[in-house]
Image (cartoon, rainbow, N blue to C red; front, side, top):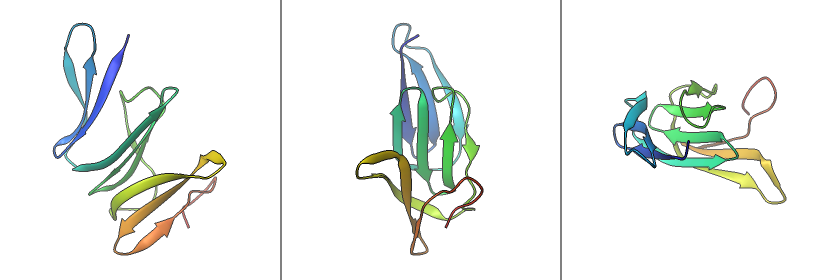
Length: 100
C-alpha cells in the first residue's frame, strides 16, 4: 500500500494514496517535523519526539519528555544518527538507552 504521512497542527495522519482513505495515527500534538525513510519515521512535535517503525501507523514517544521539538536532523555522513532541537533550548542525540 502506498501511503502519505502528514504532520499537522492536530497530529499525524496516514492517507492511502490509492483510495484516499485517511486515519489518525497520532492525535493531539502539533507536528513541526516529520521524516520517513524506508518505513521508519520520526516526528518532532509540541509534545516531544516520536518514532514509528511501521511506516507511520503507530507512534511511540522517544524519551525526551514533553519538550517542544522544533527540528530534527541527521548527522552528516551518518543518517542513522539524529539530533533534535528543543524548547526550552536544547540539542539532544539518542543513544541506545537515553537522550543526551
